[in-house]
Length: 582
Image (tube, rainbow, N blue to C red):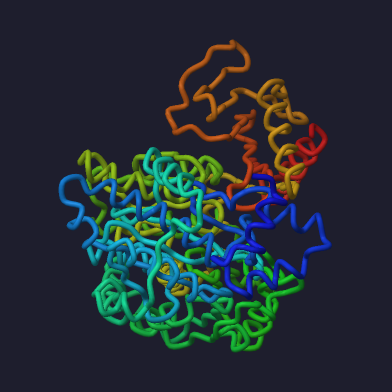
């Protein structure tokens, strides 16, 4: 069906409500807008759905949410074998954040599940994504759903699906669920029911404080040195902003229960605001965006804070600034930097006090800093590298348990996400806040700052620096152009980027690692993915990867310098070389 036929169908079929038809009538003379809304289905990919809120097949709305949930429900039922009722009774846990339409989309998913005979456990208010990961395992659910668009702009929302291990679905299950969603081609085949009927049938259950309390207990198990917190809890000054999202209550609760006395919350960003009106223009609730920290930095200077912490709207990612005595200013940390601070602290302290488990493992993604491998080697911890996406880190936890091989200690990715412990199987900014504050307390007890500690890591392991370069290409033409860029890089790979030679090319789409000098190939050993990774001289690298959630192609890069200034020069040169090649 052509995009215009789809538009006419949505405009005239009584299945769609009057508000939807009115919205579509308003764009009747805007051909480009009609095309963008209907030229494709909003794709249920390996991370679920994500898109602009609005009417249309290529938008987040009640109908696309129901359709995706019907596919998930069909898949759940297909896994029931001879006892379908048992798997239905396990149910699906559902959480949501502060974005536009999040509570409504959560209920649309729950009522579709209920209409299929599958119990839904729905949180009574917004909750962090990692708490959903914890909750579904705590409740023994077969799956989980989070309604969130993470750090995307306010016009977006999304839908992430989890399986019973608490992680986002990985291969081959993700592909199987995607196939079921694609089979749902007629919106009239999608089931739903009223909220009252679902409650009366025992298929819609509200959950809340009982899960919160259990989650807090698990978080506290990751504290290593209670004494160091007690020693500095009344001196350490922490500024925190939840970016108007789900982190506010759990972050403040865990810090309070651990004894931290001086936690200052940015008042303008404390309560839910789906428009993120105080986070810059355009609004972008992303810990990577310096504009989003404007109010937090102002407050930090007023109260003379030691650290600034920010969680994104669904509270799975953590951004930080740390005070520097020398410059009398606050230093921004990348996700690589904060991840390394936490990782090195955990490994050092656990080895020092004898609480390191046998066969410990640190898990990182291919686009995360190479310092991770150096720290793991230094502390004699198994280092495992996976594809981009925290679901692959969560998958490793499951494999460790199934194979009785390694004990997971810490996992991180460059995009401000990490996880200490195994209470959740997705990145967890709440536990990251807790660990970061313990590390900051340790620094204060030893008369240094978190920035001083970061400098010590650079001196010990090398001045690693990473960056990104992204090209945004929207619509049908943009999607084709992104693929053309990947095809050219794959078919005619560069031999160097500037003065850095390409040593190896890892093509994860074709499962090959090619030695660029000898031409010899070996399997990559990782799942199939449209990703190209160039190993370069001098411990440098570049990785090309189309985004799975935005109309972008991203180039991740990393270098190793002899000083901060040298690393800065090197990463700028590499970025320029990548741009020049493109």
